Length: 132
Image 1 (spheres, rainbow, N blue to C red):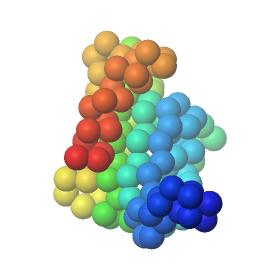
Image 2: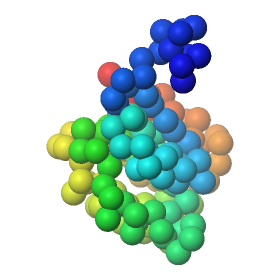
Image 3: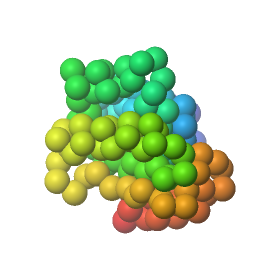
């Protein structure tokens, strides 16, 4: 980050950074943001693999919530499976209780599956919401 700040003027103060990913990358996004509170102000979480390690992310976030001012985009596709949809809904409820009002965005895509194409279709709306 010091290089990015020096060479490109990237802000590195509290909440200045953004992080995002899909599938296990979405899960890692949440874990890293939780590990470094106040560092990331915006998170892009697409189709997170909540199921990983017996849904440990739900327990971790329950005990150590994100900073309430963090803006989080959370999405999932209905074609990803019943369990995936249920897991992301559980995560959404947990985050809704932790984040400030208006800081949780996202969508349930009726036609979305667990693929790069589905995430690419949703990405413009996600970035617009996160950075508007």
